[in-house]
Amino acid sequence: MTILVQFAIGLLFGLGLVISGMSNPAKVLNFLDLGGIPAGTWDASLAFVMAGAVAVTFVGFRHVLKLAQPLLADRFHVPTRSDIDPRIIVGPAIFGIGWGLAGFCPGPALTALGFGSISALVFVVAMFAGMVLARFIAQLPSSTRLAAPVDPLET
Image (cartoon, rainbow, N blue to C red; front, side, top):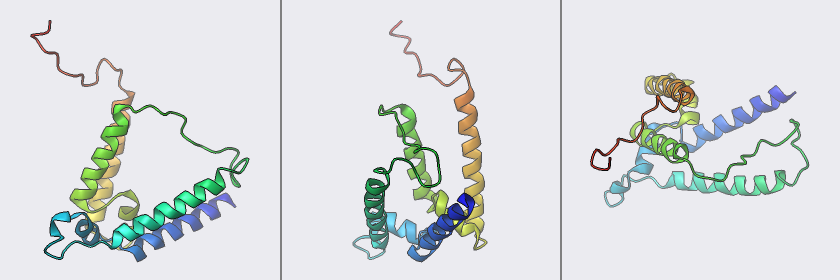
């Protein structure tokens, strides 16, 4: 039963991405092109998509988190850390750069694969390669990771 519910939710999410235009990188890049405001190429429609998503999430989370436990799981999986580490800064920065360069983020890229998009395929392959690389780097002992350069004048 759980897998069917997850499939239905994924299908609904993918349908929303297609209807909103999020699976079209040209539409996303026009949204991100704030320099195109005077020239008329800026597309503000994705701001409405984002506002709708934030509103649904705000209402949904407030309702769901009042429950004692989720309907299809034993417990909620809510983050417990509240500190800001470098990964919480670097990760979203890389995400934003990739989104701005390619016009895709992970969900819409996977949706665009269904249309046979070669650019989506390249993005998804690069995304998975980046995920594997990030996991590999995280597994390295801290002494072998790249450290900040030492200033020879301070020693």
